[in-house]
Image (tube, rainbow, N blue to C red; front, side, top):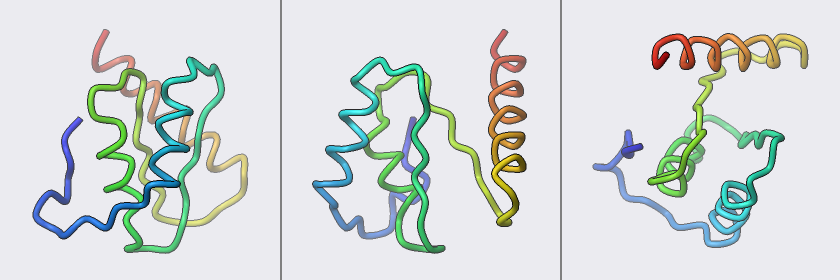
Length: 86
């Protein structure tokens, strides 16, 4: 995975990066959601911590809906990734 914002100046967040790395290295069967206000660097921190990791799927969320809407979006994105690779 490569950074989509490599030209921007990255602000390191060691605590958040450690949490994401610990989750990715845990072989957990659950999922991790990184959320926050627009423009705070969510995509960048995930891009940088997920380099070389397997089973990472970024789901762009453009509108806020219900929890069920979010789960459906995640499932659609994952299914699309599996179909495109398989």
